[in-house]
Length: 420
Ligand SMILES: [Zn+2]
Image (cartoon, rainbow, N blue to C red; front, side, top):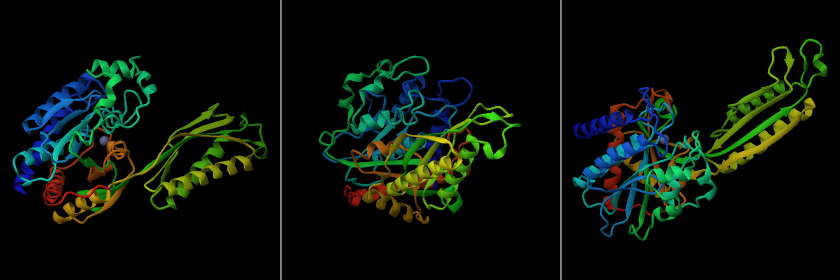
């Protein structure tokens, strides 16, 4: 345990070092796609990868990639993302990349014996999607997912297009397809495993340092608008009103009630815009957002249909018009049974109770799952807090996560998990 604690200390020190690499000078951490800060971080982490015996390159979309030299064994990819939200915490992303580097170091030192696979580490360039509003640019390219050419003309807040940003970082938008993982060129792909902080309160509430992700939730996002009639707040009797905000309020409560009664589902109205928005005027229009997530697609689809019907019924009863639009939708991603089972056994070997939990947040594994088996290990974070400078993970929990990954890799030395 002392040895794994020492390695966890190195991981923590490196996370600290990366937190100082920011595109801002306010002492906070902000690293967006294609920024100078990303170039510096790739240089620093690339150096650690090289010391771990990996062959390192930055691909055309800016992912930092390091792999052991090809020798006929298939590739197991470990990693996470190196970009951040604005004013980020220090663990979201770097925790997964630096535990992966620690595993590569241990593999190079022979800790895992004769592994049946090679170890590769990836630091993704765009998981948060802050600069261009497009998440998974890096993992989409690595997975070889269809890359919508229209995305290349998206512009950032400064008017720079994605194509220009890719070129400025050293890539070529025309040849991104060549950066896709090729199973033949890698002698086969075992899968992708990511360590990530939980970003939620479940592990903490269960008194557990780590948990195995069962699935990454599917998500549907809608915009809705109740249109009624604005009017004088003093002269319009209650029975003659078409109050759009009161309708929205009734709908928001219905959303909460439904989700509370539907185990595993979460639903949120996070935005609301009221017109005309004056204290002495009856609201004529109320427009809002609805976010519905579940690890089970059938449950999510059923909930979306039911909530839409509820909104329509509320509008009908109150004599209002309802506009309803789906903004975005993607299905749930199941973690690969073989890798998931191996991770769960690796957790059990540390003496911790094995808890499997879904991820409500999206991750690069969603994009990669189109190409190869994926699995994730969550690490407890304080108060469930993330995307915030106070995001916190303890040294002891990082040591346990390393211990789990060690056990997992040793189990691979004995028998590679079968692909999905
Ligand atoms: Zn993340």
